[in-house]
Image (cartoon, rainbow, N blue to C red):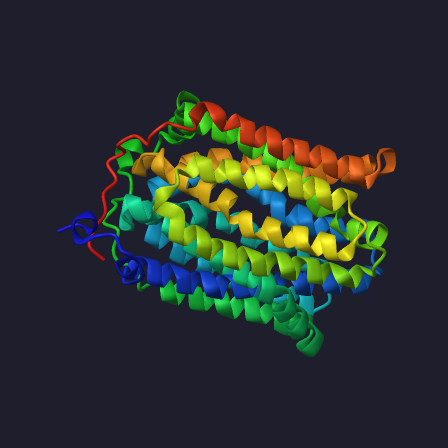
Length: 416
């Protein structure tokens, strides 16, 4: 009897062995990522006396591998056994962290960039493998609720992560912070052993030489689907908007609100707490709302909230808008993830993810790199108004596909 026949209530979702395991692994990875992010940020800022070029290299180390390796990682994720791929990625991440830790200990402080760089590369193989297993082990009508749980987890760490990362670095220093990351990656690999067997055979020798064909097939699959094409366009517009807003958030705090740069953490905490609540709300109503509608709602809310943040000089107003934006933002993440899973066949989920994800990240990196020049040429109000317009255009892109139903993609769910 498969999961569809057993029912799809919330309790059955939480009893899903795959979901239990992957959530625990995600908790460990989030701890490592947030400790890493803040340890590297604070260390580089101290070491270089807040040199903006050195600090910007952190973002390059984190995001450039996503843009370069996502296509390749997604293709290999569709060829390899996903459970084995995820375990090996976490193990290799742990090993690389401890190797880099040794180089830092013996005097090469610039090696801190390698921690983020290597981890980001390996995640491009692990993350699409996780998506494949999600489609394999979770019933289709529960996908959106499952994505809402992941969004809630991300929101929890948006609140707790900065505090945890800052505390560990301030108390124990860089080397201990990096060691913590290595340990949690190792623990995550051990946890993933508990994943149910996926029974997905690795590709045979006869097709192992067809990497290029499979690589191109991912692009062709996205192009031939109107829904995935429109989703790709929405990715591009959202990436441009998010990149601008993230790069200039600090100036909103210092110039528009007249507060010190430390006040930025409170904006992030309010936004993260609201995302946690919003993820829970979406989880309750997820089955009743099509994912493309969720995405459009999230982007419309993002449009107005981004524009208001750019014009506001009132701390209470800005915090309120951040709260409202955080409540609705989970609709974007949950809508996108669910659409990729529902409109992609199980055999090509990794490649679809590998094609679409770089569109968002690539545009985000581009807009972040141009943010400084934009600030020199325009006011913050104008820039944030333009970012809001990009979000609004992303929502309008959803209009032609608003009523489309997901195809029957042989969504096989196994007993877990």
